[in-house]
Image (cartoon, rainbow, N blue to C red; front, side, top):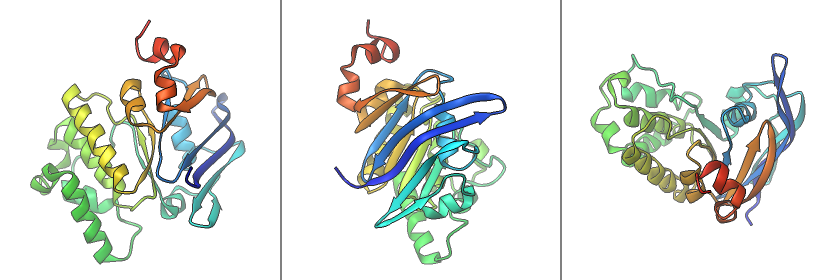
Length: 243
């Protein structure tokens, strides 16, 4: 197995008075797609947001490895976490509807200084999503749901992440668009970006994940390879509709 990229150890997070994450531990190795699955309210989104510094961690640690260097990013400012090499594509896309497609993509590179590299990565995003190139001067709010999802992923890639975190990329999309988005995620992975995926559509997540963690009420209840989880009777019954 490749070296660890992200190592989350015994994470405890409360929002208000509610203890959401309870000793959550998982890891992502370089070159992996890792999926977190679970019912609504299991703590999946909170996990991603806590890794990205949006929520204060009471205890536990989040370590990120780049080459030989290990950085403790627990409770670090989100901007610094992004500059370390992590990027989150949030649930609900959260694009800037009144700005153009091109402006949304440029916003994703706001921490970067090398204009030539930014231009190269912009060309890469447009090669992945040709429809965005065609519509780059349109207002982002005029795009279809699927196109907005592509834009959100493209914007996340513009910070040049080593690890891309995705929160519910298939949410609200038609089945054909879900297929397209997951095919593009596989391409992004093949091009060298590791992925941490939260996905309600467990069947799609299990199809592309190297490893899977099942979250139940804020705890890791099970983990294994994508194949192991696909063949697990409890997972089949709870998340795949197989009785």
